[in-house]
Image 1 (cartoon, one colour):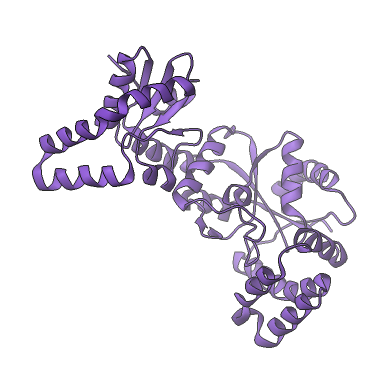
Image 2 (cartoon, one colour):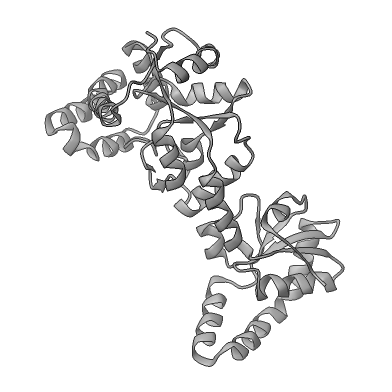
Amino acid sequence: MVKRLEIQDFLAAPEPMLDVRSPGEYNQGHIPGAISYPLFSNEERAQVGICYKQQGRDAAVELGFDLLGPKLGTMVRWAKNIAPNRTVRVHCWRGGMRSGGVGWGLQMAGFQVTTLEGGYKAFRRWARHVFETSRQIIVLGGMTGTGKTHILHALQDLGEQVLDLEGLANHRGSSFGSLDMPPQPTTEHYENLICDRLSQLDSQRPVWIEAESRRVGVCRVPAELFQQMEIAPTLEIVRSIDERLDILVEVYGETNRDELVAATERIRKRLGGQRTQAAVDLIRQEQPREVCKVVLDYYDRTYRHDLERRNKIIPQVDVSGLTPKAAAQLLVKKAPFLVSTSVSLT
């Protein structure tokens, strides 16, 4: 009999994890680390679903076996390549027939198989619990170009707990945030990635998170986590304007000019027609530093508006002239005092 495990024990097991849902389901969102091992193609899954609705369960099961039969040998050989020791974890959507059928077939082929009680749906329920878990969050704020992401990575290098929302989203969080970045995950899979990271962190220790809006590009931050970020203490990173321009030119200086123009046009209404045209002209003239000066005016105004919305004193930490590592060290040193007293440090 195939062994079944609850979600946390299933995730903690070391064997390769096979997701037997269709490729479309997998691409929409999957447990991080799971390998796509589809029982049916997208088209076959649709056929079985239609059959179930029109002819009932028995007919759908028979069709499933008809579709599966010619594939069994290939699937067993594929599983041997994935898990030479013949020990695997298997899951589907609800922990029902698909994972049970594949588990039975692999077991007959000499595999030791564990399935997930409740399937991927159980993982998604557990993710909500992970997001709701109370955490000691410290939000790292600061105007565009202050190097918050670099400092966040430096904090992690120092052994601090970090959740990089932009890194997981493949987006820098602005109109220009997708430039030179890989495609973004779906919001569903973004939540899965966040869950995976948070589940590895100690809820009794502080976790640093960069200040974000509810959306990072097309990805939405889980509401339960965002609510905690909204009330968490925030520290504002401050740098000189020249350093900020240096950082932005380093990030976007080699970006495709047509893509920069398109990103600038996306904020035309907020930047204003005159400023937008000036920025576009400067892009065409290969003057990235001057472009950044124009665009920063908009982003600085937006940032100040957000600070006013928060209606609370946010301590500042001036890191002008400091490397990301030195800035991170200063934050670690000052954070306990600043978070507890909300005194501004300039």
